[in-house]
Image 1 (cartoon, rainbow, N blue to C red):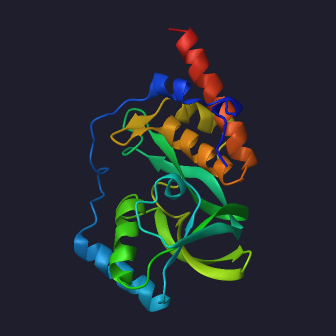
Image 2 (cartoon, rainbow, N blue to C red):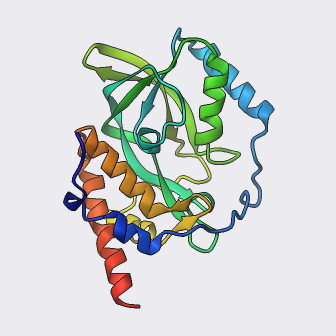
Length: 233
């Protein structure tokens, strides 16, 4: 099913008004980049905890519209006890030190509809390392890998996903949608704007028949913020 952009308030045309690429400021003071050895050790620990024949990944945000891995199957899935939330504070990627951003992670409570990907058999270590390199936000991390159970039409599956560590240095907690909207309408980093991250996520969820009520309200608030900023110039 393809979405009609006119149903979204946060259109590509509005996003283009705030889209920009900022220089990468590098890691926060007191933090470092993960090394290849760090990722390999973390992947080994995850696979020691649970080693499937085929890796399943539960996607709730950007992995839905930009998975960047091969997969042999995909299906809707629900993660109970978790909800998607803009709860990670970013000063890189889609934000800067001067204009920080927020990124989504799974946070405790509620439920989350997403997509379950099944990856090809073999090469588990390399598959997990590639996910860690893409998704982990810093060192020490706040967006952390975790095996969770998800429900699909065929039954329960165990999947790797990324959740917010409440004791992590970048955890922002539960913020009002109006606060999230104000930040998302303005922030951008070396990966692009926070607004395009939201727009692509909502658009892709809609294509899969998933409407997240909070994200749907948020995209309308961000659209209004961008429109107001453009009119005030």
